[in-house]
Amino acid sequence: MQSYIDILKNIYLATIVLIGVAWVIDIPQYFGLSLISAEWMGPLLSIGIAAAFLKHPYSKKAGLFEIILGFAALLSWCWMSLHYADWIIDIFGYTAEKFIPGIIALLLLMEALRKSAGLPITILVWTLIAYGFFGYLMPQPFEAEQLQMPRLIMYLYSDTNGIPGQVLSVIGRLVLAFIVLGKLMEITGATQFFTNLALAAMGHRRGGPAKVAVVASSVFGSINGTSVGNIMSTGIVTIPLMKKAGFKAHYAAAIEAVASNGGQFAPPVMGATAFLIAEFLQMNYIDVVIAAIVPASLYYVCLFLQVDAIALRDGLHGLPKKDLPKASKVLKKGWVFLLPLGFLLYLLFWRGFNPAVAALWSVGALLILSSLLRRRFLTLKEWGALIVGGGENMLPLLMIGGGAGVVIGVMNITGLGFSLSLVLTQIGTNAGMLVMLMLTGVIAIILGMGMPTPAIYVVLSVILAPAIVDMGVSPIAAHLFIFYFGLLSFLTPPVAIASFVAAGLAGSKIWPTSWSGVQLAAVAYILPFLWCFNEALLLQGSTIANIYAVITALVAALLIAKALQIMVERTRSSLGIGLLVFGGGLVVGSSTIWLGNESILTLIVAGTGISILVLIRTYWHQGHVFMASKKQY
Image (cartoon, rainbow, N blue to C red; front, side, top):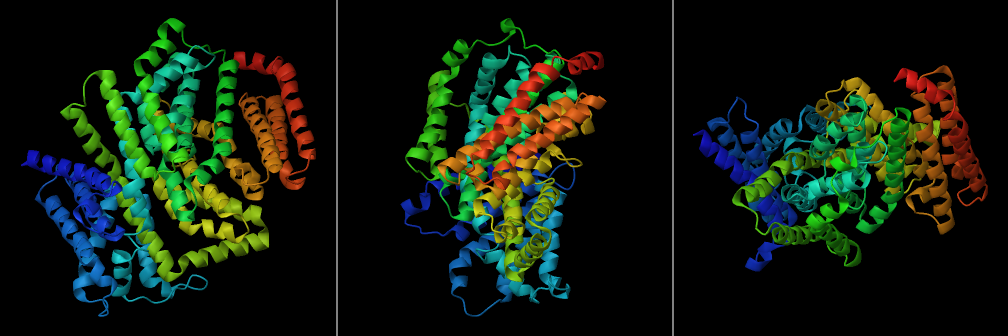
């Protein structure tokens, strides 16, 4: 019996990928079928729910009860798809044959969401559902219209502003295509190739394994769509190497966590969230990537310099060259893995392909090239790992897409989104935009705790982004602001999931790891404020303004990185000097705000910052700090 259940589960998981791919390449049109998004989403979501019950059973093993729940999900969601076209023009209202299947479908979705994605997002979605029913009892400004149950259920169940709407559509097309690409990279050895290439290039340098982690995790993390998945893919190699090179366990874990998390906002793919942002803002995907380039670059520059400073302070050397792969051999063996990524960028930027289609073309290229390289095609086991494994990776995302549809639906039908935006805008008006942004950042971190990347962005873009836009910030700056702070929940205690997972691999304590992660990612807590006040940091200004913003932000990032490593020495003098340098970084970074984004005086301020860095290098690092560090470490 159990073997048949496992087979059924694998069929469900594989079908998720196959349906998604069929939708991307528009298979129905070859059979003369014209389906709209909501009709396609019903079967896809229902199969995901059925798979979730078999993958996360109520007892140790799935049984008949889980199978029945899965069939109920299939029936209730496919019922919506089959009747969707008729319901659009139906004048008879919310009859029982509509909303009763809707109740069943919604309850099964919520339970599958709890099993697949955890309690935090499930509690949030249930809270909003309760608000939809009882929001009319709330005081102003949160009082909502009283809604009858059939109306609310049908809105969530069958409206394109509800569950079968934009978010689920993007996940079922765009995210799925990149999940498949990332999974294929893992199976064919492309992930290992990039790690080996980074080892060959930097493994022998000071703190080399940590620098390898920064480079490898930034490349692979942009594609695979999950911080935790990135840690588990690259961290199992880089963390032991960092410890072997002399990095303390909590630093090794923190470096990997911060590097992997940064991949989620590293162009060109940004963990597939770039496409969500483009869809939400109705703007060109390339414009999103351009806006994200400078902040992501500064994030990794700051991390890289801190890694180098830690290695210098602790006297850590790279790995022996004899123990490292040679770049020529790595390239000779795996150079073909570079071509699919180059092909992907070509299709996206030069040919303007739909991102999902471009990703699948890259999947095809990778399949062919890896087969030529290994002189064999994928084995049956590898095909299973690709299709079933891809479906397994998609499972929580599909549930989250459905949950996000509930959030958006309730926000729309009750007006809660407008009410929240109004409250935050009033705070900004009374206390200033900086205070409002700080409050928004804290809320984003809290709401983002425990949620996967796409869910973080979708929820926050609906709840928080409109208020920032109302304060005069451009939509792209507002959405990147909430996206960054939502992702920082992976590093911010007490629920620093990325740090916790990395700590498990490193065998380090959780709290030292998470606080070290906050330190290493410090620039990411500051940059979003800067671009809300000066969008030239996102390359949204004039050429001169863009240049000045990038220069001052880079110098600021260097100063902040240096300050944090000075303060880590924990002597009285190092703390004082570190705070002064940190303050100098804030002054330099914000100079385009208080001097004007095209003022040449900002270059003078940046030059002063560079002078401070030179003084620190020639005096402070040759003085008592490193003497103290040798005693301490």
